[in-house]
Image 1 (cartoon, one colour):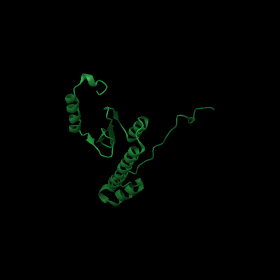
Image 2 (image 1 turned 135 degrees about the vertical axis):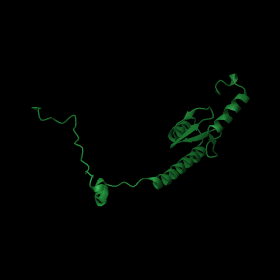
Image 3 (image 1 turned 135 degrees about the horizontal axis):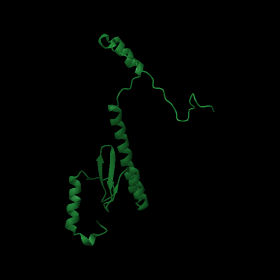
Image 4 (image 1 turned 180 degrees about the vertical axis):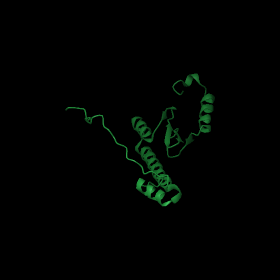
Length: 139
C-alpha cells in the first residue's frame, strides 16, 4: 500500500491503519516506530511500517537485521521477545495436565467396584514395520 502511495491519500492510509487497531493490532513501545503486533492463539504476528505481515518473532528479527536496524533497537526487541517467552512458560506450566501411566488408571478402576466388573485391561497394540520380514518371506 505504501509502495503505491500515490494511488492512496493520507486519509485512506490513516483509515486503514485505524481499522488494523480495531482488528486487534497494537502499537508497542518496545517495537520500532511504525511496527504493530497482534497475538493470535499462541502466535505473535508483526506488521512492518510497510504493512508487511511477519508470522513469528524470528522472522521479525530477521527482517530488522536485513533492513539494518540499529543495535539498540534490536536489543530492545530481543528483550521484548524474551519477556514474551518467559510469560508463555509461566502460563503453560500452570495449565498442563497431569499425565498418569495406564497401569495407575487400571489400578484405580479395579479398586472402584462398580466399574471393575466391566473393566478390561488395555492391550498393547502390535506394531508392524513395513521393513519387517513376514513369516512367508524366504529371505
